[in-house]
Picture 1 (cartoon, rainbow, N blue to C red):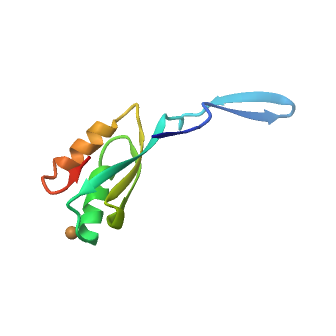
Picture 2 (spheres, rainbow, N blue to C red):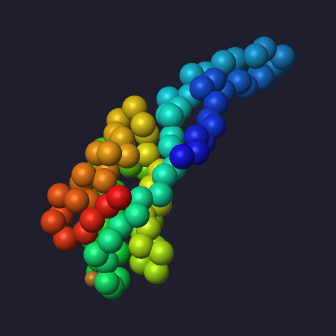
Length: 97
Ligand SMILES: [Cu+2]
């Protein structure tokens, strides 16, 4: 897992005055790879991507059929790797590990 660093505060200098803004987009983003078994075609790839993208807190999800992998970026304050794996497993078709 790798953390993507983002600034919590944004600073802007206007007429010599420093102004600080809280970055509302600030999130603890985590990028992880999930091993996914049971995918055979482009439809499966799309289905698994949609399962992940529909989960709360997921920012990006891409599935690589040939590697049997899903690369997912999420806000770890809103979801977890275990929750995302469970969502895939709940399909009853694809198996995440
Ligand atoms: Cu398929």
